[in-house]
Image 1 (tube, rainbow, N blue to C red):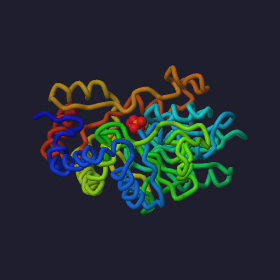
Image 2 (tube, rainbow, N blue to C red; image 1 turned 180 degrees about the horizontal axis):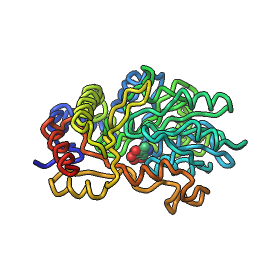
Image 3 (spheres, helix red, strand yellow; image 1 turned 90 degrees about the vertical axis):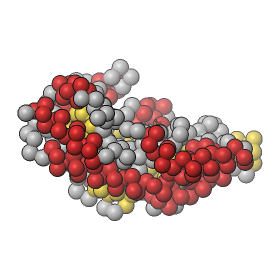
Image 4 (spheres, helix red, strand yellow; image 1 turned 120 degrees about the vertical axis):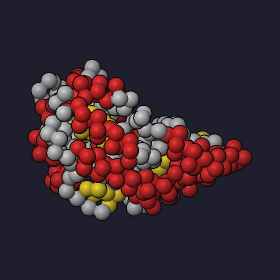
Length: 369
Ligand SMILES: Cc1ncc(COP(=O)(O)O)c(C=O)c1O
């Protein structure tokens, strides 16, 4: 049996008639950039997340960059974030001219730790950028409290958390703005690069729409209100996302089922720590990440059994060449540094079968027998 990390072809085959029709419609209408399918998706995704607005953009990185810029974050400002994320989170902070400040993570949930955030506050701190890593939201109540006490803006990196809930509310509706990536392998994935920003703030949404389209006045083409960007979503991506969104909840429910099966199968196996669900959270298992003391050896065993695994992420961001200059060194964020040595992502995608989960579990049990 072969078990891949993900299999996008199965999903395409299941939705092929709808997807092909939606893509053909973009061609017929020549609505290649933004256009009606993108606008329809914006309305549908805002309704799904429970926010007033959604602004579709070119990718998740640009979503973060635009959200920070529209929130007025720039040179001289500090943004506190997690070192345990994809580099784009921190890249966006640097690209708006602000300084990223890393705070450590919770050892079981891998999300930004509010107490650690408190210890990193300075008079220049302007914003918090928590990441709902692996599909589970950060401890938002604790972060809201810090933000409120110090007058900080909170922006969510929800790139891995489409549909996740915190106290019943969706990711993307838990802060000033929620930033999504629709990279093909995400829980809601396009057929190319795409992203989106959700917000309840109509003025912010207006500014985001202007910024994504070269800063042009929405009512006066070729008149530029500010220096903006070309961060628009293309029509094909809006069309694909519009077809896939109605299937997101079923896919997430299936991921939770598979996660439960993994957890049951691995229960009591001493060296393996399975993912923990934080209070108030309903995760969507973008990734299913275990912790083991001998990560490389286990990955080798699974590879020999034709089971793909991955490490998301092996390098604490503060120790990588790009982000080391921002001041944190080895030992400064010990919880993250330890996690990076022990984490291993197992295959997880809605089309995965029970037999495949059981096979992975069996191979892990055999490894530790
Ligand atoms: C946590 C996180 N933030 C940001 C991004 C960036 O998204 P994109 O690749 O669409 O630019 C990703 C994508 O992998 C991500 O996982």
